[in-house]
Image 1 (cartoon, rainbow, N blue to C red):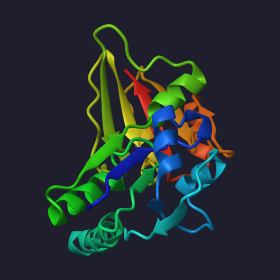
Image 2: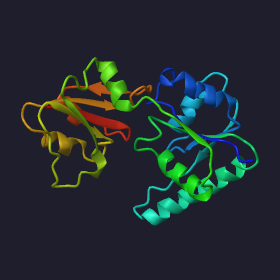
Image 3: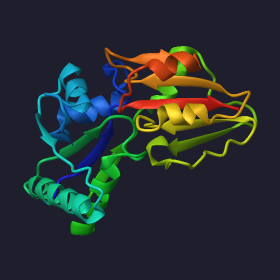
Length: 230
């Protein structure tokens, strides 16, 4: 009988932000998978897992390609899904643990879709995680939105050269993963905006800054964002 699959959000980086439900699932898991590190010995997800009490399952880091060829990306995801399904079919509960929330700009959503395509009757459960922009706002004591204000999440890395982001008044826009375009995006912000920059929130090398001139001089980081209040 095929065991249950779990997608678990680990939050932005601080193990203390992992929810009680997520910890409970991880502690009883038979096998845990996460995204492999790019350019370092251990991924952020694996580091969080290692810091949690009572998590004894084997952790396997899976490599996902960042190729511009979507067919290549999806083929790699399908391969990983097939491998995880093999474990599930032996009765082993499997978890895919991802930083942030598993249903928000996460590899987990693609993996779940691939698993359900292979096994339409798949039993699964998604455990949400604390997202990075909420953690940054809490860290800096900055209100994201209130009353009738709006909140938008925009993938900053997808804003092409020459393209501008439209900012509506009375709201907040989060430019997520702005590592490729950060300084260009800063330069094009309309007058009167307030900006907060966060990188590696919850990790040992986290950066939080609200001075636009200082932000320009900071090294770029993959796990980064600009929070723009307008």
